[in-house]
Length: 500
Image 1 (cartoon, rainbow, N blue to C red):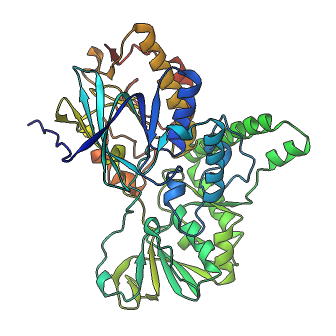
Image 2 (spheres, helix red, strand yellow):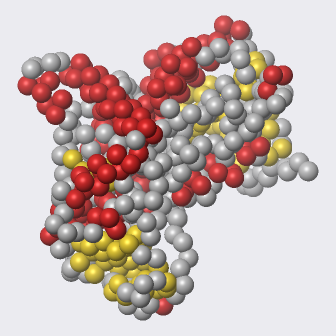
Image 3 (cartoon, rainbow, N blue to C red):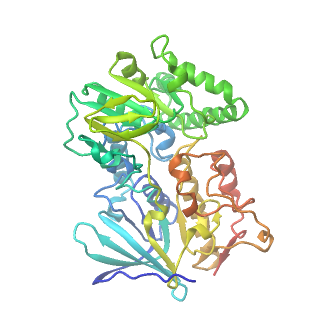
């Protein structure tokens, strides 16, 4: 049965036509705008973003200590130098993005507080009609566009994932998810329990430890962590040699990518050795006899989930000082005073922080339809992890999670889309649609991201909603920068893509 799209009700203001509509004004959207301006100056474009300003994650997340978990030499743009520390705060990242927007004169193309609700493709008109809502006024607006470039990220900004535990309603204190952080939260001299073991927990704990009475990390299972000074020694040496900033930036990016790739290779070829090295690195920050085997000994292989980088070992310094502690156990139930674990230990708390992950949100939660029939993206096959079979003139920037940063893939996707746009102009066509080929009749479909490659909880919870990938090109999504940086520029743009 075909599901018919619903239409927004109410007066809709007509906003006109743009050649390309970019959804999202975070790192991916700014990157897309840069490439469009540089390589396709004749195309008109607009960016719509639901937040009150640019920055995406770095604007919406305001919990204490919010910082990058990728180095900024690769998380930053290839076309905009980064001169700060490798791991940067949200404020530093926002300042960098503001400079990029100003230098490239992108601000005039952005409209904020605008949430895209629906997108309807007309085969007859060969264009999308996009209905958006002005969040400051509730006014509905309508755009038409030839192409939609989705840069809104991959998760729901307004609401994080919080499991339902028995007895939560009995707890007398506050329960907070980092994505819904109260501006006026007073945690001075309070007992705090942070549930979770990933990068968010590793960020919040050292930021709050000095002011809190005590802060406890309660984790069901550990995460791999790597501690090192927040500096790039190669960059510092090159600066002392008076090497130009442009060269330093490029060398630093290549060096980070190279060392990350070598780490991945080692994780695959000698996972036990890498695991031992990571645990030993943690132990050197902690007191002798600390139970590293209990609290920093994950069950999965290194890099099947992200390794949490701990700059300057600040989390471990908090543990060593006694201001913070780790508990590895399961939650039995919440009590009036805190949490009772399965082992029978009660963790008293004034505030409980549920740093338990994200809710993935496919393509911004927008309702897409083709000639009135709703698109079920779980029934589509991804073209190189960028476009979707049967869906015309639509791409999605979904970055890397492992050996390379999100932005490295945003660059590759931008360059690929520019090639496709130029190819369309050469052909004199306006529509491009990925379509399985005759030789794909026996294609074997798999999940959007192979769980053997990367398997965090937020991704596993949502794989049933995501597009599929195939067992051959151009239907693979490898999450491998080194593969895609060679394959994307050489891709045969007539293979798997239909033009009209």
